Image (spheres, rainbow, N blue to C red):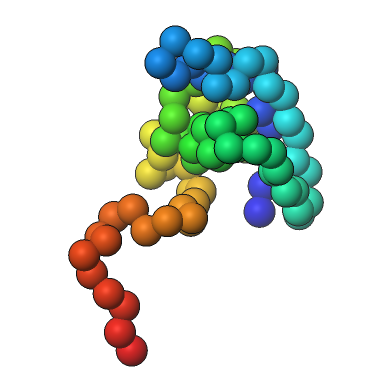
Length: 94
């Protein structure tokens, strides 16, 4: 696991600030819960950390290395969505 630093993250969606100057430090091995009402930016933050949502301002670093411009596939980060998003027509059978 690595430390994650979000510094002054800004994301605008449909003309509105989804993240406005958000900063967060998660130490190596630390567990963090992100809580808040619908629409407050939780998913946007997680998508930005994973590289799925580009920042309009600020930066993201893993272990002190800036990954803001790094492609999602090169970040080594996984994200599990609350709802199935890729293959809703398929089922898992054992």
